[in-house]
Length: 258
Image 1 (cartoon, rainbow, N blue to C red):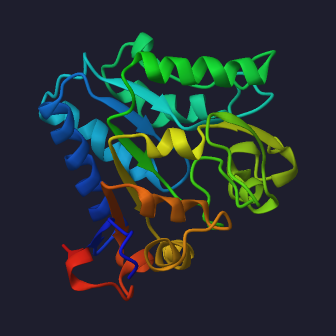
Image 2 (cartoon, rainbow, N blue to C red):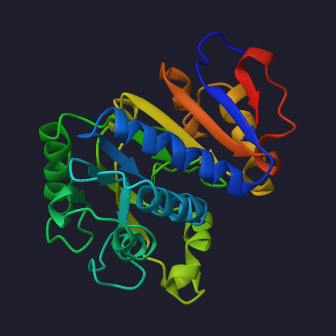
């Protein structure tokens, strides 16, 4: 493995066990730093994590009054109330289930009349919050994180992005199962914004993610696999189930089985 790789791999027997472990890690981080700034992803993979986190914070009466959240991305051209919006997704899967003031929840507005100005506003909001302490990530089947798609070059800061066909297909369930109904563009945190988080945890489950996880850990840093840029970060945890990472050829010091 290249010397640049700092990621710690944590392999769990099931996707639920991985989700539960991540929920515990985040809950402990909130206990340690009550004013934690937390970056959050969407997609199918983190649904179980959000369910576990909501249950854990309620069961252990964890105080979320100081927590601030920033979501990674949002579809362009749809209102926050749209049933396919990521804001609606997060409300359904997490924010309706926890005690967190609306003023502490931050989203990109996909319906903003000036998308570029909205991206700048978001960057300023993150800076005003003191930066992101813990950034949770998923990974697309094409290696994207946030909506940073494979491309000849990657955008550093929050930006407008054209979505790849495979990304639209993977989000079709939010739009009645029709990939053509998925917006063709989105707003997303950029790679530098993500990498400025003080710590990063990537959650990946299922066989469809195994190839990208392996390339993330063992392959070169390349814009063809945006997630590979996580190799540049000094504090990254990769949390996987056995389907996504159980057969990875990594050095023993990098892998931790649970």
